[in-house]
Image 1 (tube, one colour):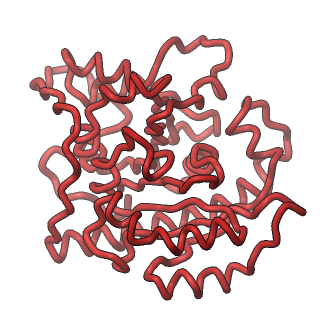
Image 2 (cartoon, rainbow, N blue to C red; image 1 turned 90 degrees about the horizontal axis):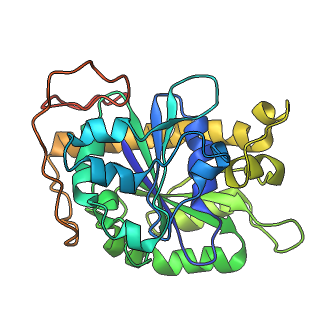
Length: 301
């Protein structure tokens, strides 16, 4: 499955949410930093640079001589959650690097994976260079927003804009869902999730869950990964497990619907030229991720 995440202006960071959800994902998963302004997740898990330079730019360069899925496998970082099933594809180091990423080719590659789910951090929805081809190809598009009056009102006003920018096939078909993060304590008066769900449902956008406000645990994904013994049972990790289950269920349902109804996806905006796919040489199979060449996708994710 392919799931894209984004925020609106002034909303909480998507990267932390995507990393927390990937950490708790019930299946094999890859978190992709596709924010066009650049990513920092590699420095969170490898602050000393022991793994060398890895990321989307290195993938793009390697794909000129190597099949794209092999090039991607060489750039993955295994998240230190003890499972060996969750990975990170680090982002570019700035907008100039991001401009050269072949998003259309990558979107096609992500959709081919049969046993690996791909969670893409797309940054802000209207940012210059946003990976719209990835969002348009996604089985589910997720809006991350803060539980305060201004953020919620902005989201309601922006649903039609989001549909157009993300290239969704239809509005209110379950392709767009929301996940809420509580506002800072004392900074804003939040609203009950049931009330938010009711308002959003009236606009055809389900509320898929709430991530806990947990600054200490969030810092492990946003600053430097140095977890304490309480990290595994923290409020953020616990809530991300529940949200991950719900997002996986919704993405699987919509994926099956798209396949059964043969829906034609919205054509993405023109982007950089696609990477030329070289023939796959005879080589030792790579463990992660495995593309699905010509086979039907697996709805289980």
